[in-house]
Image 1: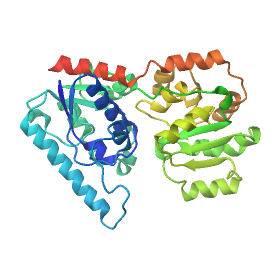
Image 2: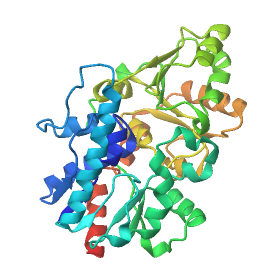
Image 3: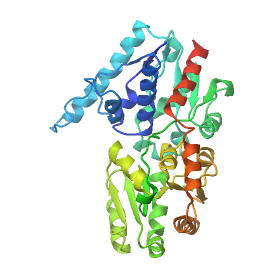
Image 4: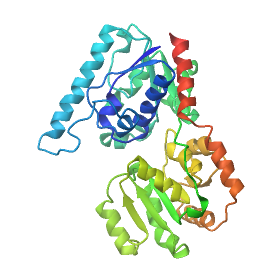
Length: 362
């Protein structure tokens, strides 16, 4: 099969779950003998360059100059024109946009598939100004597509709530993650890790609010916030006032550094109130970490009984659950059981299920 992908998410993300999904999906398609066509002239996306190191789609990455962002915006526009050129040629079997650029799918002569990653745009309209603008086209594209992939049952339920799409047009396909760890349980540190964005519905402020009490009970432990940008002035001021500077650290990481944190950390924490899936859950379990998660439907779906859950609006509940988790001994069998559970979520399995969707609609 020949599958056409646009460049949309690779224009926007250097790192991120959605571009990671598509980079691995394209890689798996090539391994399995299919022909993915990515209409891409340039990208600074790191997953793409790690999986396809011999491509020539990255330039000027080490140079900084006035007007560089405007140049990249022009290149992104050229990427979109390049996609429309491929659509005009009509030399493909399925069109699978990587995000929500506005296409008139009803005019495309071949079947199309849209992947819906979460329903944050719909559930939190007050933060739309901070999100990728093409999110506003999501509903129109989903309703016009031949088929819709939801990354979780929870996301599918959100689609049913907000969109007019029949259930039989939606297929749930879970995502994958990295599994080839070199785990040494004796090298696990007293580290808590938090990954990604900390603002708005991510609810990081709840975790920050309990840290003084948390580290009073766990004085040898540290919290590493990985990615998500530098700590804000308000976060820094709060940490200074509460005497937390020796316990909380923010670190920007590439994939290799993130893997190192996974392997050394003991506990992964998420404070989010809404997600579409949760790749860090799978990778944390696979790396032998324990999980402290908000009690929301998507986390119950993905982690099942492999985590402790706390009320996302109850700081005391969160505090007590994390302290209990960090002061309880975990047996090697429990860790191996979690690793075994996580092994069910692979990029290969995800791609195989997506291929079945492609075959159904051709």
